Length: 204
Image 1 (cartoon, rainbow, N blue to C red):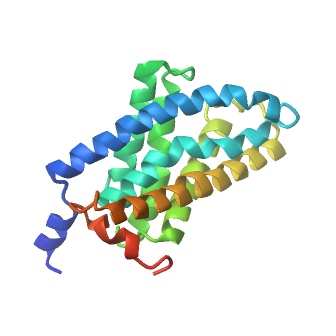
Image 2 (cartoon, helix red, strand yellow):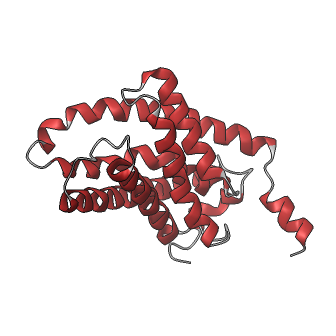
């Protein structure tokens, strides 16, 4: 493939931007609702707070889903960051820190797709992208100055990060991959490289 062909394949079209924006807007609504749900699980994690990491995957869905559908460099970061901005506009209980979280979580997923040169969008890649997004989420929450669990001891921080990784892989990775295959089978992704996602090999 020539350099020009690669540039055209990776360049963003208007339809890519529009659909990525729609994913991000829907993601912003999801973020807001997911944040409200976080309050509901507090009694469940009261016995051991790091278990809340198992809930974190919902905040990473736009990054993985956007990348699986758009399949262009920057899709994961764009969708996750714009979704975080949407949550902030709707009134996030986490304030401006959601923007940083969105950028970092999007970056985690983006690095995985970039590592495969934006050519692998199978289940293992989606799981890795979700896991990496979860890793960045856990590190952000545990070690950066605004992290809400920065006071945890070392073991609690490790377990929280591990739970975020698991949640990211399962909720953001696996569910986004399933959703992309479902959308492809309806014909909704006919304008994208992901249009054949419904019949692509699971591990190929």
